[in-house]
Length: 121
Image (tube, rainbow, N blue to C red):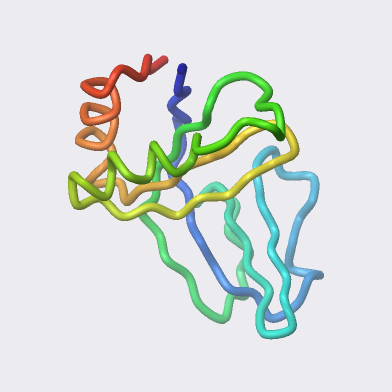
């Protein structure tokens, strides 16, 4: 399985209003529940008004389109990283999964996954 490194820093933040989200930006994920509104975006694109933010994330994505019948992809990746004491923040699109790790653990995470047989591109 191939994992593609993303070349930019990311931030996870909590917003007060959906009007703070600029949907014209090239990369972002939005999660809304009855309790909060969360945004993952490039650090350079963080809205000026956030209720909370956590900077210093890097990410990689599983390359290709994943069929919904596939089982355990995220579980295997998160298991390898957990075995190496690396926490994750995961988000998914219709096509694939994105795994965020803190910047200081990024190289170590990719090394662990490469050692487990993943191709890093």
